[in-house]
Image (tube, rainbow, N blue to C red; front, side, top):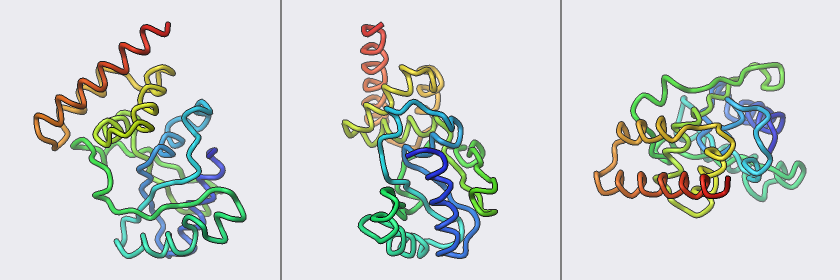
Length: 180
């Protein structure tokens, strides 16, 4: 997904829900901070988002512009309406949101998770695709090891989970160094 496609999703979600602010929490949140991100980090055709207005908006989004919808069939990408609790994020993440607000969003605003907060959420999720995404962030120097580690310290997870995430992060960073 490219930045214009995410802007289209924001505009469409606003038209469907009547809300004017959406938080983008999945990998496509990268497009807020880095509109011209490397292609390997933009392979997903789905944008995970929620409104700040009502949890019920997630169902409207899924039903209208979600997977297998006419929107998806027409454009080749789609939105996934989620809840705020979907991603595990560090304390203070709301203060670091990166705004997308322009003509292409139709006056609505996309609030994208900052890249280091995004990396933390991916490390906590721990799926192979999430870890590959974090490895790409580090490889392309879009995120720094030190700041991701610092953010993990302010994430509300158990100490065991934190140690697992730090080990994942160290492994990814070491793997990246061995490539170079």
